[in-house]
Length: 255
Image 1: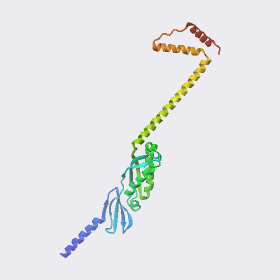
Image 2: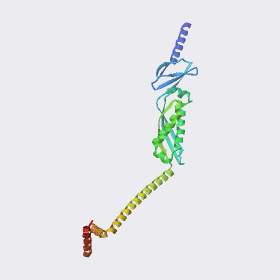
Image 3: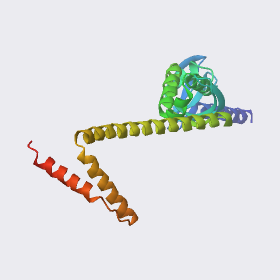
Image 4: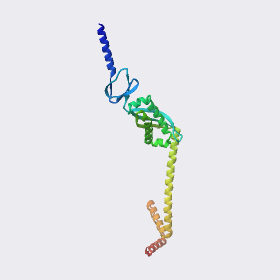
């Protein structure tokens, strides 16, 4: 009877030891093993064995993790307050460093993402924040990647999700854009007037050199007015004769 009890206890103990000794991790997981407090190695994926009680394990997920950086107020370089939130994507590439180099790599990466977002936005003007999001995303990603590299973490992407500005600043931006459009319109109008004035100066010089041309232009204008308004224009026959004579003389003038 006692022998049977010992056998049962021994069998239960062996089953318990085996259940603790046999470990299985998935394809996207790795296990960091510590033996009596010392780093023993990294195992996985699949089946492996550990020594119960002596070995302790820390499981690490190698898949891409998404961090939702909460919206926070940031002051840009030109002293404008904006509310910015972002999404950060990262993954563990070295499980041993992720466990040994930082106490909680998930919390550390999340906190670092918030501070880096504020630092990068604080060095940029508001206009660039609104128009150069791709460059800002890349800048934040590079800064995060450099800081998390000692932890065995790779930042794979950063996306600014929303940039909010208060109503007062929105109205100021709208006024600035309207003033810019009005300035461009005035410049275009001034350029047009300058070109027209230059053409008129050239025409005046031509009329001064050949006086008959201004009379011909006058007759052409009268003809256009008569055609558009259904009018009949009666010209002085003497003037017509003079113009015809001057035109003929001009044509016969030796070149």
